[in-house]
Image (cartoon, rainbow, N blue to C red; front, side, top):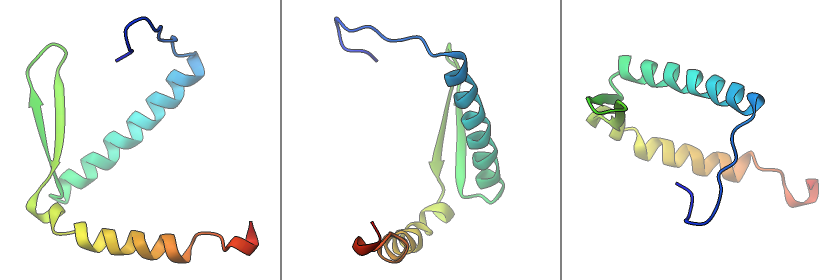
Length: 84
């Protein structure tokens, strides 16, 4: 939401294409996570429709492993200062 007194630029065609492409990929990934029972999808019948995703207990159980993997990647896959 834009702050009062500011304008919001309309997206360009290219912006919309990127958004649509990203939205499609995101939807595909969320569908895969649903199939693996890692996330639960809730649809609220409002106008416009509202869709929410939340981690299931199974998805939540992965949090510590993902956190550790992220920490390792940040420490080991980032360029060394002398490489910059």
